[in-house]
Image (tube, rainbow, N blue to C red; front, side):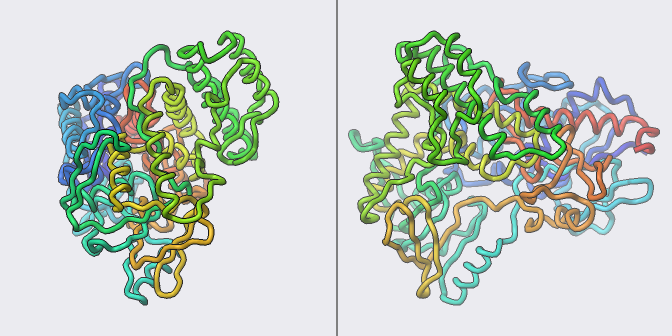
Length: 605
């Protein structure tokens, strides 16, 4: 009998694993062919999130030149590098275009088809348009994958779960909000994938509370404005240079969040000159030392300061090498003194309000670094901290000024240390993937700084604010259930509140095993799988094997992606950034091929 492999989830992560199988098979696999089964109700390549069948109004938040599914010489893998075109080369779009998601779906479909053609001739691939609902184990360790609507399970020697982002049952607060809405005939939309949400109940002109100011909000904004017939016209001299022409079908979106501001705009200029030599202070050596500690480590006390020092190094390397006229010390001398600083000298977002250590302040003073050129992650993370306004009306112009200033800064190469910090964030993310579950604060900080919307979307936001379609609520947003309505308050406008009969949670569901709607994962969680403290599926970061409740890992079950505690920043990535996702895919593919290549090895496993 030919060996069999099942990959549950045929989106970009599953496609990436398949690509690494194709790349490694010539050197590692000398068996009698391999039958691969892909299980996913959505099309292979794009999967649910990146399927081609979605609104053409929705964009990627990455430029075409920053998206690839192929390895290059920077990716540290044991398997071979198999170069391929990035999205801009494949599509013919200018590199700094923000493509629509339909285009990305087409690219991913092509990568999938290209990968199929690269597999050895005796490999077969079959796509099952169904959901996997349970995973069991048969005689001899054979894995049995039960599909919705099918009596007999698929059987295989190994299975990989590349499930991507998943729906989740609401937590206690969301259940209470929904019940309150039902009692008072209100509307509550819990966390969801905005492109799949039914927004038809949001009536024209109706005030809608929106909690969340990230990418899910941007999608909501687009679908409820341009998606309802609105349009933009150029208006030179206006903030953002645009004027919104409403259709009359838009609701009024009152938006706030913990930070009270949108994610930082994508950088709008190219990188020039030498990259900062990363990693410098948070690299494999430091990660292995943290992993080896018998009692574990405290992320806030021991890891955050290393992150702050690493990001500061990227920032000041760029400042001193690209803008030396703004410094008064030779870079080599500064670097030597900087390296000697204790990580505790660096304030972090986990300790807001704590000033930099005296040694760091003294070094920056001696180097003649202007306060405006100094990196303060806590201030960058919470720009509205301490700011107060007398009314929501007074807040609007202040927030428009903030967004306009962020746009100007992100498109001005004079602030290129910001782009160096972005490269530092990618480097840090690649290292932290080896530590397992690092909690939600780091991922939120990373997304806020590194995964914000394209500049044109923020220009549209400014136009919508001026048109009164979007209203800002500020930071520290809370939503109460009072007097038969949803009542919003924020720390930015003390004493004021705003009432509405509709509330939208503009964020993705949390990937928690205890609340996931994925039946297969729920069953695993109830049986043998281990959950991290944050509720993620615990895996061996070396190759993605599932951890077991009795200790050790399962020899035939693997998982990769955002539902695991070894999640990386994305299934696809910028070229030449040593993508952690590509490294994980390669390690899992090689482990799978070694497991499947010989009957004796399969039996021993």
